[in-house]
Image (tube, rainbow, N blue to C red):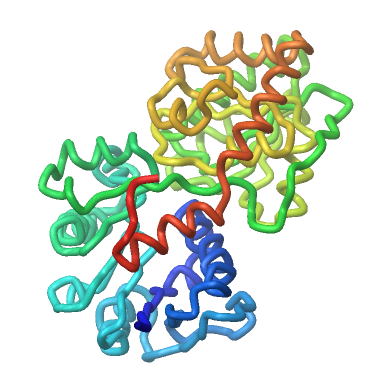
Amino acid sequence: MATDIIINGRFLTQGITGVQRYARELLPAFDALLDSRPELRVRLLTPPIDHDSVPALRNIRHESVGRRQGHAWEQLDLPRHVGRAVLFCPGNTAPVASLLGRGRVVVTVHDLSYRYFPEAYSRGFRLLYNRLIPLILRRADRVVTVSQSERRAILEHYPFADERLIAIQNGGLPTGIDEQTPDPAADPTVLYVGSLSKRKNFPGMLAAAIRLARTRGTRFVFIGGVPQGLTETLSSVPDDLRDHIRFAGQVNDWDQLLAAYRSAHCFLFPSFYEASPLPPIEAMGCGCPVIAGDIPSLRERCDDAARYCDPADIDGIVAAVEAVLDDPAHASALRAAGYAQARRYSWHHCAQATLDAIVGTGEQA
């Protein structure tokens, strides 16, 4: 018996952060799985969009519907075109009309960071999510989140979602990109990839970078967007160290990202909060030793393949970087463990488990 599935493609009209990366990686992985699933008929619905913005797909049919954009499109235009199909929403939100209707809805809720770090979000954003997320957790047929750590955190706030909430870890390196051999730069270089935000501990990383650049000449590369409110922090880099601490901004080109991972001597990720972060596993797949914050989600994601540090302890962050830079044997062991850990994650596996959840047979993965 055929099953009709619609993917909410609003993510293709948004800027690329971890949520959009997740959806963009799942899309071709779903498409490949459909080669052997002829009983599934899948459509990707988007707002009006440039055709070149949609990836080439063999089995998933793309349709632009409605005239609106953003939340208005998702809430008003999208539900009118779902019919009796299963609706999959990969980006935290879903149409209220579909949630309250009789059709099957599956939603990925990546995290509750708007609750944990309310100061990082606008009042309008918090109002929307404080109403919509509980409705999703109560009304969606299945809710996917991206780690067991985040599942436990969500259930602390919304215990009623226990039976419908499942954890499926994100993939690792992008589909079609294999492990990379490191090609370290001549000078010791430390890399960070991600949002330059307080919850990611950017001020702490910058303090460590300034100290290591001053005392050892270590070079740092920060790749990621800068939220409002941190401009002053960026300007705190002393003039004589600006050649050692580089801010590359948001980078979405994979050739550039892979080159950055491969050239770094270690990857620093002492975050205060994560759900299922992509950069540490990407770094591992590129042979870059990883230093991570000692928090449950990073322990779950990286296991024994990272060196851990207290993200609140600048001295500890500095000591961890020095240990990796000064001990080739330790760095080599982390590199080997990182390769093995990166092989545990694939977007194929993530897509398979998610597709099973969409059609109603999924268990936790």
